[in-house]
Length: 471
Image (tube, rainbow, N blue to C red; front, side):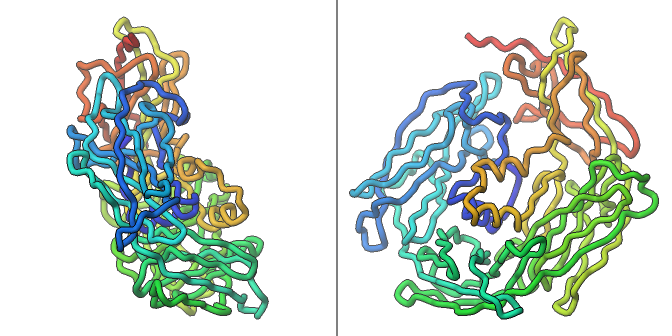
C-alpha cells in the first residue's frame, strides 16, 4: 500500500513513541500472515562511528521500499510477502545482515524492489533513516555521536512534575529518551540548536505544556534544564451550525495546532488531538498548546467541514490562538457529503461476499502533510500510554485504519461507504484473498479504480473480480 504523505517531524515523533518502531496502515491487518511468499535476498554492511570504529548494538530495520515500476512512490514493508519486518542488532564488529524481498505485491501486480529505506538507532548515537538503492549498497554506514540533555519540570503551581515527554523540532531527530522519576534524559540528540516542547499528559483530563525552549547541544557538553515550568493548555470549543440535522451521528472534530514561530513543512512542530461531537452538535477539547495556528476539521454522518476552496484534500478552517487566550471558540460552516455503493460479482454474475472495499478521502494537516480524513489521533493519550509502558505496537496503524472508509461486502456482494467529500476525485480498491479485479476493468498502476461523489447523492459502482489461481 502506498502510504500517505507526512512530514519527518510526525514520522520521527511516532517512531520515538513506539520505541523506534513505526507501523503505517497496511492492506492486511495480520502482519504475520504471508499471502504471497517471495524469494528473499540478504545484504550486509558495517555500522561505524565518525572515526571508523565499529558500533555494537545499533538496531537496524527495513522501514520501507521503492520499486522499478513506480520509483517516485514509497511503500511500507511488504508483510504480505515477507512477514513482519525484523529488527537486527549490529554485532561486536558492527556488522548487520538484512533480508529483503526481491519483489512485492501480488501475482496480478508485482513490483520489483530497487531501494530500501532503513531505520537505524542507538542509545548513544544520532538516529539515521537512510535510503539506499540496491545497486549502490554501502559497505559502511557512519553514525554520529549524540549529545546529552536532561530536564526536570515544575507545574505553574510550583509542584514537581515527575514525568515529562519532550517534543523536538529537529526534523531529522529520533532520539531515545529515558524516563526516570523527576528527570527525562537522552544521549542521542543531534548537535546544534534544537527547540523543545515539554509535555506532561498525566494531570487528569488536562495536559500541561511548556513554552518552546531552545538548547545548544554539543556531544562534549551535556546540557541540563532544571525546573522547566509547565502550565495547563488552552481550551477549544464550539458547536456545529444549525443546518446540520440533530442528533449528530458518528461525528468528531480533529484539532491541530502548528506552533508559533515554526515554518510549515520545514522545522514545523505541531500538536494533534480530537474529540467526539455530541448529539446536540457541541464539542470541546480541554487542553492544547499555544500560541499558534489552530486547524479544525469536522466530520459526521452526511456532513463535513466546508473548505474555503475545493482541493484534493479537506483543509478545514484555521484560527489564531494567542498567548493571552485561555480558551478559543470556533465556528465554521458544514457541507453535505456523498455516498458510494459498490456491488462485487464474479465473471458469472455471482455475488462475492467478504471483499474489502476501501477508499481514501484525505485531510491535509497544516504544516505536516496529508493523512486519512477519518484518522483520530490523540497525542496526549499516546504519550501517556507510552510513558506508562502500555502503548500497543500497532497503535499508529490503528489510528490510521478507518472502518468508515473500508468495509466488507455482504452476502449480496454489496457495501455502502458514507461521508465522502464531494466534487473531488477519489480512488477505490477491492481486495480479497481468493479474487482479484478483472483485467478488463480500468484501473491505475496500483490496481485502483476512481470515482467522484456529489452532495447528497449516491454513486453506484459494479466491480467484476476473477478467481485467483493459487498454484
